[in-house]
Amino acid sequence: MAGNITFTMIKPKAVENGHIGNILAKVIEGGFKIKAMKYLRLTKEQAMEFYAVHKERPFYDELTDFMSSGPIVAAILEKENAVEDYRKLIGATNPAEAAEGTIRKLYATDIQANAVHGSDSDENAQIESNFFFSKLERF
Ligand code: CMP
Image (cartoon, rainbow, N blue to C red; front, top):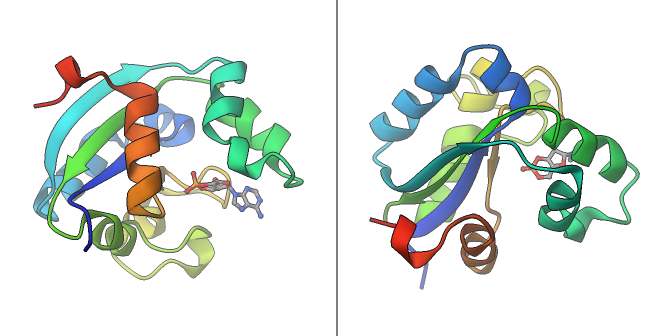
């Protein structure tokens, strides 16, 4: 059965470009409830731990430099079928391939600075949410 939470981050470039408000508006209009949220800057080590599944990929060092280059917004989102529905709302990883009206099509600049992260499975939604949030920070 599909789970009802997903985890997202608004990435440093989208924050720097002033898109936090517009992205959160799309998320809420899309029917997602914010269960937890924080504004923070990851250290390089924290970004490496978060993206450890990609450590063998050629873009890992650059990605983790980028993700620790400035503040992000991290959030747990709640909705029925959250992982799949959120991936539809944000669009393809590469914004050049993202559908019209999706968050990445509207606010991303390239495949690395692709505006937002979204969990790719229910299992990773739990792992990623637990990376950032304690039980006391969820509502
Ligand atoms: P995200 O959804 O955060 O998950 C992994 C991230 O790796 C992805 O978004 C992109 O930011 C990044 N990524 C994936 N593929 C590439 C690539 N080919 N080149 C650079 N970055 C990539």
